[in-house]
Image (cartoon, rainbow, N blue to C red; front, side, top):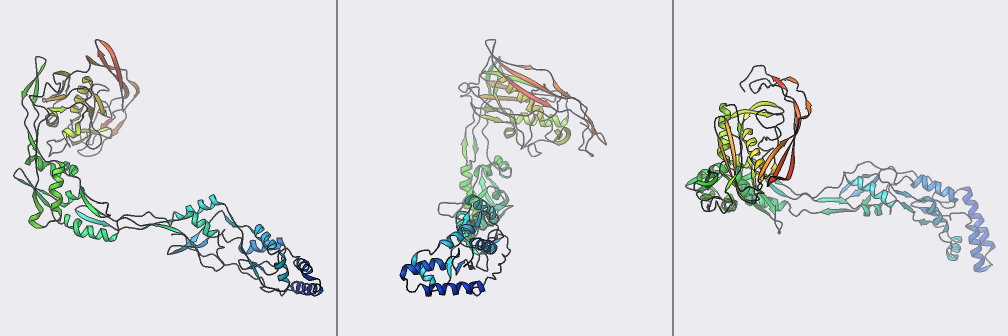
Length: 590
């Protein structure tokens, strides 16, 4: 709201009738002139009138209630400046719609000089001059207002910030399994140009009514009545209970909390809130994805192997059944307004053929080994489990031409439910225990396989400090929800990923068609070397001690060759921070 303080009214002690001695002398002088000119005719009266009005401002002249009659021009300006000059310099009392307040306005002021000039010049025609000889009536003159338009608009725009508000549409959202209504709000804004005009058309204050400033209003498309209807007819019933889907002979319950995460209500062309279900998001939600996977069979790609340097089919693929996002929307939405047993319904499944079958291996261009890479690691139970599980999930991936493959999307979140256990990871530049430790060995092996296959990396990131078992500048780590390993298959043919793990190694092989005769790595020297520090780790069993290692920069060139000649080169730059020496209160097994 605009600031609310009142503008004081200046006292006007000017006599309203010409009772001063000077005024009485002027009246007597005028009477004598009139008597002496009675017999000289019209011209004589006009001349007498001009002589009688020898004062700069004619008697009886008032400007916005301020009497300046009979004053010299300088006296009249002083009086107007005193009485009216501060009308806009202080807070101006205004009304905006139903609200009253005050506004500070710049760029609008009284032009007392021009006002007095006009007051002095007004009524110089013969009839007005002669008429003043026979009347002492008052004459009101409009004040002249000076407006610096840009300055006035800028100050009013600043004042409007406390008044203006955007229109808010009525809406219904869903949170934690509950329907939440948001009522609409009418938008309003000051008409700045109109406000400048209004303030320049009246002298504020002096006990007058507030200056009414024009405002614009914006009505929301969705009002309170529509919000109430949407709550009653859809939103509240939708969150009243779970819905149950049947698929593959199984029943799958979806809670209101899960439904609400993927449910919205949006205004349609008729300004009605209509429900929309994000079928794709709901399908990927872990609360539904896992039970759906148990109720349906995924398509299985054919398994391949190398035999005498040639790719052969080890086992054929198998068609599967899947629920599509569209089928999920179609099944769930009608159930949301039902009650009791009617909130259960079947969801359709579709037959899905595998990407890779015995029949299409050759057509997809999967005919040779593009690259292979192995990383060895020190055996530890968590490494064996986590690396083996990640390899199992990656093995058999088929990446069609121009498709982008994602480590996180393929392997999934490293949770106990997904087959992973707690291990050692790097967080905030030091080792600590968390689920999925050791999986970076699989990421590094995959990164090197794609590096030497010559396909294009899209997203990757190295460990914060160097780990000795990995090649410098050619390694990668992953973190669920923040860092992925992705590549785009720009080889022109399909790529098959073979991933195999032992208790001490992980090997990833890319099968397809080579884009280049050879891909080589050329590593530069370590630069910008920095020594590590020594610090204590976090207390408790989460702490993992670590040995020190210097930080450094390194650049690795990927060199593409055809016919023994270099045809292309690209540089991968990596910065490793120092690996500080970390000691723990109680040593834990790493």
